[in-house]
Amino acid sequence: MATLASPAVSEATSAQQLPDQLPDFSTDAYKDAYSRINAIVIEGEQEAHDNYIAIGTLIPDQAEELARLARMELKHMKGFTACANNLGVTADMPFAKEFFAPLHGNFQKALAEGKVTTCLLIQAILIEAFAISAYHIYIPVADPFARKITEGVVKDEYTHLNYGQEWLKANLETCREELEQANRDNLPLVRKMLEQVAGDASVLHMDQEDLMADFLTSYQEALMDVGLTSREIAKMAAAALIG
Amino acid sequence: MFGLIGHSTSFEEARAKARSLGFEEFAEGDLDVWCSAPPQLVERLEVTSATGKTIEGAYIDSCFVPEMLSRFKTARRKVLSAMELAQKNGLDITALGGFTSIIFENFNLLKEQQIRSTTLEWDRFTTGNTHTAWVICRQVETNAPLLGIDLRQARVAVVGATGDIGSAVCRWLSQRTGVKELLLVARQPQPLLHLQQELCGGRILSLEEALPEADVVVWVASLPQTLSIDAANLKSPCLMIDGGYPKNLDTKASGAGIHVLKGGIVEFFSDITWQMMEMAEMDNPKRQMFACFAEAILLEFEGIHTNFSWGRNNITLDKMDLIGAASERHGFRALGLALQSDPSPALTTA
Image 1 (tube, helix red, strand yellow):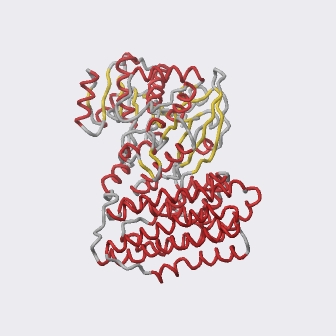
Image 2 (spheres, chains in turn yellow, purple; image 1 turned 90 degrees about the horizontal axis):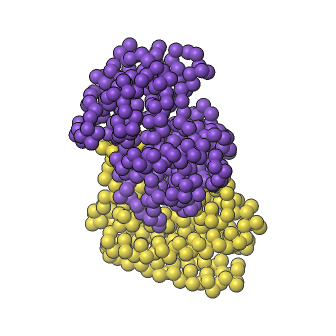
Image 3 (cartoon, one colour; image 1 turned 45 degrees about the horizontal axis):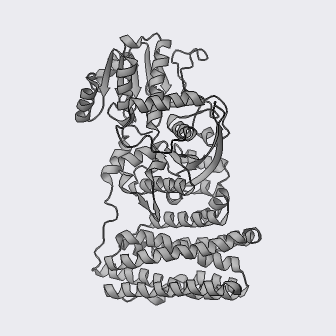
């Protein structure tokens, strides 16, 4: 039902910033921010590898498939390491380890307790949805080398998200309660992680609101495929926004 | 399956709506929270035509509120994400309601076909403008005579004449209705000249010049906040069709002989069970809805899965005929003045 532009719309259009303008990849400020963002990505891929291998110990009949996913994560890790080398940046790995520590701790605790649902929610849904949305936001503002690598990675990550979805879908009736609890415990961590890197991300021209919104969209979509209702999902997603 | 993409008319209303639908957590959130919130498929519904055919559809709230209009990236993302959600849910034809199509058009989102991993298929969406234009024309044709206005002797001002809906209304009124004279009002002079040429008639005037001359005023432009209308300068009777969005003409123009009618609103012949319209400020929310929404429903009834209304100035009289006939066949009628039930001088259904 378009009508003539309201003044508000016209003003917004004229005041709009050029979206997705490329940053200067050669500045110290860019490289400094990149050293942490890139480290997070590398650490994330390494942990993803380790987590999939670990989940395989809980569901041995899936161990082979999980090992295949894990190998892909290692390949991604190498790709992102090459991205840092290409820009002449050294990834700040201690920062990244600390960044992942709370989520890592929750995963290890769930693993020790044999909680497959929690482990899958953390790794195959939360982290994958987080990665996919971050990569989507990053691709339009990435340097040409990293862009190519990241585009390849995104396609793989969807298969990982899909793996988690399929398992949870098949087991939804028995895992719903644990899923909700795991969501409550871990989704707020993801929001905090996002806030923690918002400054660095903005140097890379990645907008925090975009990151959060895209993450929630991916997460919501994954939960929908698992078989939860819109209302259940909205309630769960709100834990990230409000919690 | 048809889809409707809508949004709340204000942030406060959005929070109240979230609360009433059981989305307590969202209701508590501030505007920043809502900016990040993804679109929600809040309701699935069934509609049965007067012909007996039943179809299914869904209502998607984009979680956009007008307070976000100044945030270009947010508004863009809200619209595209809602469209993505519609497509991913397999909705065949979805209407872009409220500000959704305005943002789509004004921010030129046609070049943003790729959103995340989804390539938006434009033929799944319609602005609904063809039906809106047809309904507004019917509202003029039906209600003017009720006020004693003979359209063959009447001057009809179209404010926002060069817009998608406005130009279609001008075409119809000049070629089908046969009004005495069209008064063309819009901001940009060049498109007005083009329109005048196309119509082979119509007089280009400023708003101030047009209003005192008009027996009927069709508003298809959003109203500037600063606009004030002096009722003393209007003809009596004067029929004003408020076809803009949001619908707030009744706050600007009232007085003896001034009749404001909500434009582009239709009423269905039977009740529809949906919660969303309860919040859309309709007088009879079980039956009334925006004509643009109804267009998606009509296209689904007719099995026309294509972007029927799309882009600017593509609305032909043939298309208006087609959607108009479907509208009547399936049980919609254009909202009219409530002349009998409201005895006050400033008759309005708003």
